[in-house]
Every structure is written in structure tokens, then in C-alpha cells.
Image (cartoon, rainbow, N blue to C red; front, side):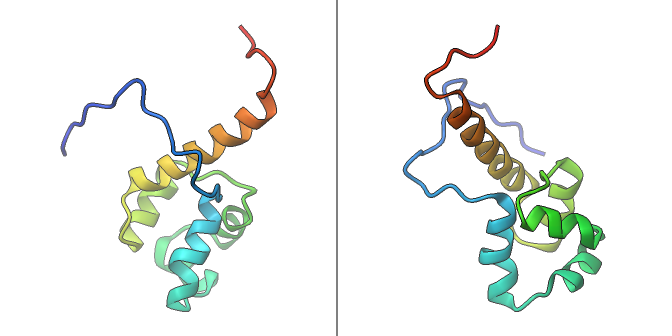
Length: 103
């Protein structure tokens, strides 16, 4: 495993279209390969109900799911976790816009 230095001032490109990790999973990986969710669920070991919730943006991708996705698809587990973090930060930032965060 390689250790990387993460810049504490790192940020995300806000000009990029915000998509949930589930939408990325469906539109960039499953649909182009004509992979039904049920077959992908069997391939990854992620329960079908959980995958459906992820694809709808109703469930977050956690570390275990990210590892399972990375074993079945090319992107790394870190990729899926960063997608989730970016999505979560954008949603919370929109809620906090114009307000001071709690102390």
C-alpha cells in the first residue's frame, strides 16, 4: 500500500456536475455494460436492496461497499469514497449557504 500526502487545502471542482455515487455507478458502469442490478448484487455480494438504495441516492457508500465495488469494477475503493464525500459535502454546503456552521 502506498501512503499519500493529502493537501489540507484540497477541494473539489464545483464546476463539475454533481452526481450521486449511485448515479455514477449506474450510468458510467452498469448501463454501458448492460449489467442488471441483480447480477451486480450477486457479483459484489452487496444485497440487492442496498444496491437499489445506493443507485437512488438514498444510501451512502461506506468503506465495505467501496471495497466490494472496487473488486468488481476498475475504480478503487478510494474513488467511491471520494465520490460519496464530494456528494455529501455539496449537499450540506447547500443547506448551510448563507449561514454560519454550528460551533
